[in-house]
Image (cartoon, rainbow, N blue to C red; front, side):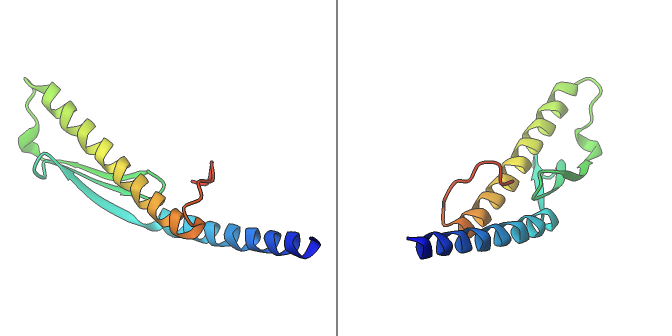
Length: 104
C-alpha cells in the first residue's frame, strides 16, 4: 500500500512539473485574431492578456460608435475564447483530460 502511495505522489509531482512548464510556454504563445473582415485585429497570449489591438480607420465613424463597440466586443470575446481553447487543449494533453481547478 505504501509503494502505491509513493508511486502516486511521484506521478503527481511529475504532472505538477509538466503543468508548470506548460504554463510558462502558454504565456509565451500568441494568437492573432481579426474581426469584421480584418477591421479589428487583436494579438493575445495564453494568459488572456491582450498584447496589441489595431483598429482600421475605415471602421471609425463618429456618428456610429455603436458599430465600433460591437466590433471590438466581438473581437475581444473571440480572442479570449481562442486563447482559452488553446490553453484547455494543451492542458488536457498533460493532465489526460482531468479537470484541475485553478491551474491557469
